[in-house]
Length: 150
Image (cartoon, rainbow, N blue to C red):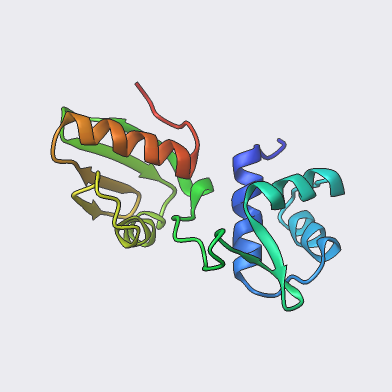
């Protein structure tokens, strides 16, 4: 089964964050090691979309301000998310990914998300009201792709 764009881009983020990639050829080889064959033009487009630039001889994820991007990673680990009433979002992850992902979500200080509570493969996210829940759902779609179960 071929990896989705979101899975491929999450793998690229993880590889780049390891700090060991200096060329696109090395990045393509690392992706092949994860079972993802990607051509050079697709990889180049992914690097632009992910705001990954070569800095001092290695690839890094940067914002326009030049600082590391604060967005959560682990997009490939997110299975789905759904709402439960007007104040709760339940996010399901692969086994073992919920706690580190909740820490990253909390670190963003997203105002729409009041609090998170993580188990092994599930994160409960509380919002103040229905309006902030809608904003939080948009943020999750931006971070992890459209994995909202209705």
